[in-house]
Image 1: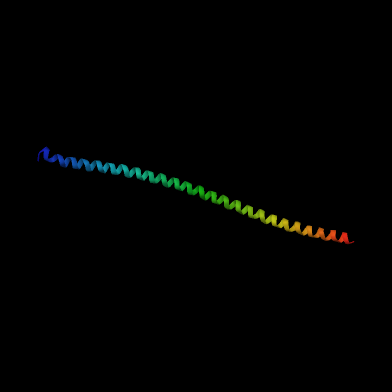
Image 2 (image 1 turned 90 degrees about the vertical axis):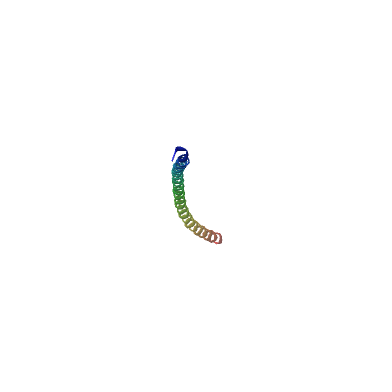
Length: 93
């Protein structure tokens, strides 16, 4: 077999080798891009989780404050009711 006959085979093997190298390079880039995207999503999820936890804590604090205000309102209403009763007694008396 002389060089003219072997040349198509050599070119084919070389082309396959280049295609394999390009595939490996692209596969590595895809893996890097996927890893970067996953890392970004993980960081975003952690941030969202932290924000939700903060909101839950704030909500609990607001509920406690609201319960305290309701208790104070009840006490104030009872005090006002007693004051009105005393005023009515003084007015009658």
